Length: 231
Image (tube, rainbow, N blue to C red):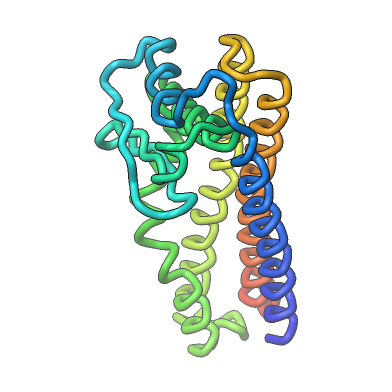
């Protein structure tokens, strides 16, 4: 188990470093005020309209960095700061979330795949590690009996969560690319504002990358515990 704790500690440390850098970047670019004077909400509404999307509502949601697109009720949810503020960071986040709405409207394949996995992952992810540990306790470490099959089921469940993490990467990167292309092509931001928006979204994407790598490392560790003891 020592190796596992080292692995989890290393992933947590990298995740903390990336998350802190992201917060600093957003704080920095929140001071770069938009020349056009538009708020995050106004940016979002315009990007939706420019893409012919009129059935998606832009709403304010409590919290910090709680921004997301909900495909079920077709809402772009912007944190209070992003919704109201008029800076490069707010423009980047608002446009990024609208990028997901555009993906949804255009039936972007990776988004559809991720949406398909959501119900399964929401059920299996929480129990996967417990199944593996329980299975190992029941004899799975020796590769025998019911315990081994319980542990294998846990690894399969964990595999779904890992797959979900990696499918999320192209979804997030594509949304950022759509956002940046729109901001630039529609002359919504100045070159300086664009650089801030691009840098902010780059660090936001890295949080998903770290999460995916952490999920894969976790899966490989537990798979080794289960299958390594089998002759």
